[in-house]
Length: 178
Image (cartoon, rainbow, N blue to C red; front, side):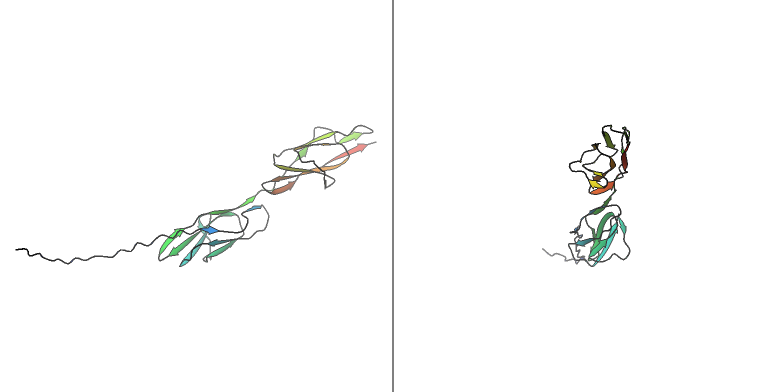
């Protein structure tokens, strides 16, 4: 006779909230030399209910705004919370490269006797993309190799640049004994 019983059921509405996908960026340089003072301001591309900035994966105390200014090297990211859902941003790393500490040497004598020809070869203990040899503290034009042959008396040194950081070597002095 076609009678159907209607049954009521309880139901729960489920709302799926998206996990935020924040992206951090900066207009500042991320590479510095050890000992340089720097300030890098990071910002995040989405507006959240709350923010927590991280350094090397650890929460930075009181870093709870939409931007953060860093002054120490490390890996930075931010957690952004929207509607109780938290998402972690990409990471940006501030790198402080070491300053080279080159040492020059020579197997030749640095003491020249009388009228002897001055011919002293200097070598350096560090490989680099950039060398600048100096005589008495002044640049020697076109002296940009990892070795240098000196032909005059004076004090020699070399500036070595690696990854944008420049270090000055020890000094060696060529003298003439009459």
